[in-house]
Image (cartoon, rainbow, N blue to C red; front, side, top):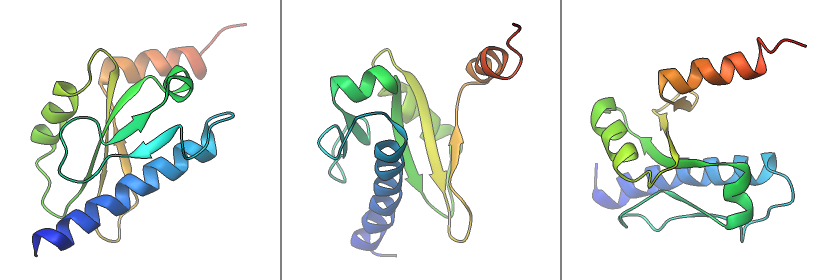
Length: 117
């Protein structure tokens, strides 16, 4: 696959994540959540201060048929800059997945599903 095609495939996932964040977060628009230009270093989704307050994650998007998850996770954590890393991964004909730290997942589960009144 040509480099241009690979970048376009990656851009599709970045735009999906961007659009889902705009749809999900409160009172944000396309100026608050932007997809980074392909090939630039750093987080794949750029957030305004308002968006970051609601979504304190550092994102990495990988749309690949042969993904090295450990390399993707390392890149995600290296770019996190103190935020919780989250990797969005996808391949053809498969729904996107979100990869997060296991300890964070269990804490999130305790706080949302198992919270006691």
